[in-house]
Amino acid sequence: MNFGGLSGPHARDLLLLVAVLFVTFSMQFLPGLALVPDLMRLSSSVWQQGMLWQLVTYPAAGWGGPSIWFLLGLLFFYMFAGDLRWALGRQRFWNLLWMSAGAAALVACLVQVLLESAGGGGPTAFVLMQGQQMLLAIAITGFAVIRRDATIMLFFVLPIRARWFIWIEIAFAWIGFLATSDFAGFLGICTAIGAVFVLLRPGRTKGLMREIRLRYERWYVKQKLNRGRRRFRVVPGGKKPKDEDDSVRRGPWVN
Image (cartoon, rainbow, N blue to C red; front, side, top):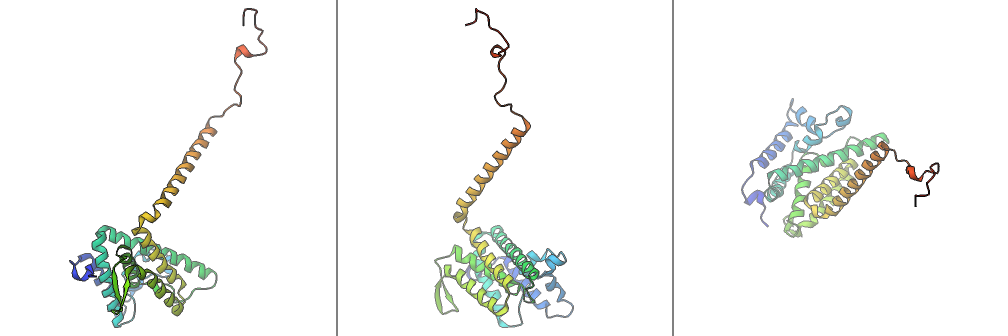
């Protein structure tokens, strides 16, 4: 299986995203510049200080220590994302990224707020979903959905069908949770995986969405009828016609 990110034409917007990840990753080790990726990354400042932009900027802030694994992560992301982008098109690809990452951030923040209110949580919140880790999870899930029957060499040794990479991602995220106790980040990764699956497999949710739409339409019609009944008061039985009133005596000529 040839990945579009390496063998096909190169997308400038995708290359720009990889460059941003590399630059923000480097900034965290440079004096005076570490503030930039810190402001971009997902943190408790979202609800404590109103830094709502972190809900969408955190995937673009490179994460991790200075090691070869960061470069390998960028390479894998570019390989999977390149094929996914050319299969979906630019607009749909970017919509997939920000919608999935945004949904993951909202769920993770909600979970972390609940944990902190219960006296839990900790300094390791969101470490599993920062930067290229979230982008890689989205790109691999998207590839597994649209290329489900493709064979990929895991660790360049084990041949595995692409559809199984979704469960492999969840397994890796669970191992990461066991190592970091980052429950919010684990659920964020799972949310992103689920969001990608739903966005790329609309046929699975078509019946559900139709049922929701029909329920809403029935509710709307019912509310409209109720407003009409309150506006016009209906007298039960109506009023008897004058010729049927008991006080009116009929003449002998009336049959």
